[in-house]
Length: 287
Image (tube, rainbow, N blue to C red):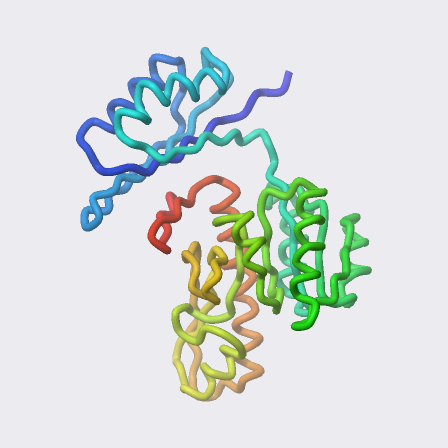
């Protein structure tokens, strides 16, 4: 018999005395075997954040019953914003990509080996370049040639595709197009972008050229949630590499692409494992 997996509870609320005790005591009473628990207090804003993961194998009640009990006995008392997630249900991830293939292949390789525990039912691109590669992995590839003139029309088609495939979240694997507001509204904190700079430095187009012009000694990449403000959404993950005056623009691009791949994969894993809480355009990422 297959085990039922784990449950993950994410909580954010005003900081008050007794929250941890109330949550853990309730879970203990209901038979939860707690595997991981982490919490953080933002003292400046007086906000409390918590992640709890427990086994469901010997849990005494159904998830629906838990939601009712937790609402009445904890959430209402402490004015919590909270979500309950089940690890046994794989999330369905759509990849949006242009012609740059490094992040695309890295994600598909991680998915094929099981290192990235998601389903990928569809890949959407504004170019035909990667169609055969997607099909080798057995994934549906849809070409939507987005231009400035047809962006609104294409946005409608994109939303139809996401709804048809019951997509949980979207990954922009160097998808060099503006995401329409309608999609951002439909997938709040569920569209992950990789930007090829250490934000907030060098936002926008051609960051490696900007870095070369400025003669930087460090370059990086940033995985972040997409908002309507370009490259300014809540940051999930970042990394850097040291460079020097001998690096050409091409050298910076090559070095940067390696950073982009590992940052994007880590950002997706944080999201899939329900380790991220976004607030005030920032994130708490539980380890």
